[in-house]
Image 1 (cartoon, rainbow, N blue to C red):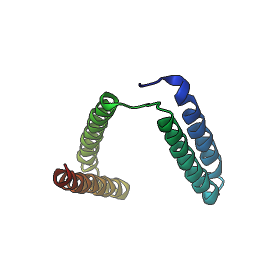
Image 2 (cartoon, helix red, strand yellow; image 1 turned 180 degrees about the vertical axis):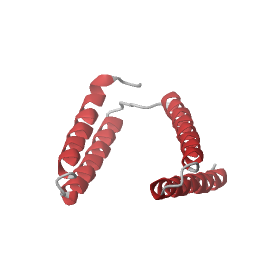
Image 3 (cartoon, rainbow, N blue to C red; image 1 turned 90 degrees about the horizontal axis):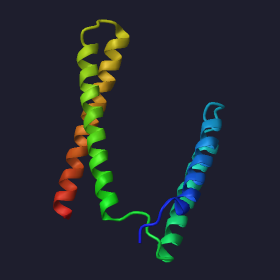
Length: 127
């Protein structure tokens, strides 16, 4: 049975506390504290999800996972198109900052394409 918000509140608290610690520590230069908070939050979420699973409480079913897959795919498509438009707009400017930003966006788009191709190849063999 998929349960609701009551079981999600501890997850929200873990992530919010870790986010607050990271938001405080990174600007002050405490990278170690931020990494520790991230690692502890990850472990806490993993432990809590395992406890729920052992008690028979399911927070995600196939429908929720499919909706998440579709929304993630659409989000990445919108970001890729936005980045491509930004590259086209930046190509009209001849300043060094615009050229640097254009190169960074080009590299990010290339990395997205390579990553997508790698995942596609992996999962086409696996499934």
